[in-house]
Structure formats: C-alpha cells, structure tokens
Amino acid sequence: EIVLTQSPGTLSLSPGERATLSCRASQSVSSSYLVWYQQKPGQAPRLLIYGTSSRATGIPDRFSGSGSGTDFTLTINRLEPEDFAVYYCQQYGTSPRYTFGQGTKLEIK
Amino acid sequence: EVQLVESGGVSVQPGGSLRLSCAASGFPFSDYAMNWVRQAPGKGLEWVSYISPGTSSSTYYADSVKGRFTISRDNAKNSLYLQMNSLRDEDTAVYFCARDIADCSGGTCHEIRFDHWGRGTLVTVSS
Image (cartoon, rainbow over all chains, first blue to last red):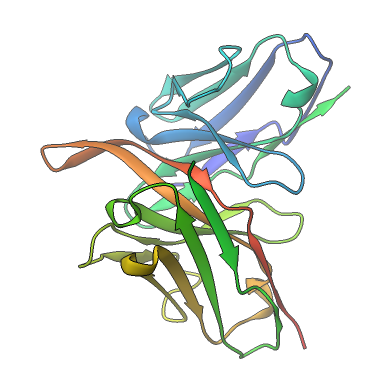
C-alpha cells in the first residue's frame, strides 16, 4: 500500500504570499495519477489539480502542481482570502485503489 | 449541470445496517465510474469504494469496509448506493459520492480524478 504523507500539517501565511505544500509517497507514483483537492469547512472537496500539473476547469492559474516519483508539490501564488482551506493529495494505485494524504491546513497568519 | 445528492444518513446502533443513496443528474450516469469517500469528524478523507461504469460493474473496497459494505448502481434510476452492514463506531463519518473520470485509450487510463462531489450525508454509529 502506498502511503501519502503531506507536510506541513498546518501552514500559516498572509494573503499575497506564496504557499508550498508537499505530498510525499512511500513508493513511486505515476505522475498521471497524482491529484490535489481543496476542502473548505462544511463543504465537499473540490478538484484542483490532476495528473500532477493539470488544472481542473475553473481553477485559477495561481494554483500549480509539480513533481515526480515520490515527491509532489502544490504551489499557490499570491494567496487570496478564499484560498485558506485544507488541501489533500490523492493517488490511484492497486490495493487500495485510491489513497489520500492526511491533509495540510492552510490558515491565515 | 452535474449534480450529486446523497441521502440516507442517520444515527444507528453498532451492528446495525444502513443504505446510502446518491442521486445523479446532469450527465450520462451509466458512462461513469463512481466512488464513495468518507470523512470522520475532524479527520481527513478516506476512500471507501469504487464501482465501474456500465452494467457488468467491477467493484473495489477499502480494507476497512471489505465484507461489510456493498456498492451498487441502478443506471435506470441514475443512482448509486452503499449498503452498510455490521456498522462500527469507527464508521461514523460524512459519506460523499464522487464521480470518477479519466482519460482512457487502448485499455489504459490516465489522469484519473474525482471531478464532482456531492455535499455528503452524515452517518453516526453510536449506542
């Protein structure tokens, strides 16, 4: 089973700053299968990035994804107030079929 | 507009059973794989189960629910279901249904992701 470990657990930044969120896999993950979601309190998760670096429909270009192998990164440039949320990475595998990281909470400093 | 609406979440005693439903609209439901994902109070996301598109559906489960939960679909009713048996305290969570989409060619699929989610339904297992 591939385990995804996200860091940091909590990231405190101010609007306008850049956020860098990490997702590390216990084994190599195909870049085609690494996904990022955003979740705000009381809401369903929202697809942000798929295939490591492709933005989902309607996602602003201040969100970008990168990485390969076991190390993946979600970068958010010029943080907006609405960007403060919890972010999860996810991978498609074999058993289990999907796993999520434990999440990174991005909070306003 | 794609819509997914979960229902059926209630409070149930340990050992009990429950069936969740997810009503889909705005897209050809039978053409898409679907998933259940849950989130315990204050915790992260946990994938629960997957069902393939079409009628001869393949299913997959997380180890934590294997043998207790059964995913199914009724394409005529545009509905996804999760039959939950032998419920435990640790099954307490908000349960989301999510549409599964991928770019497939030559029998291989890439860029698999959950592109639409419902708002969830709360299941509480407690005596």
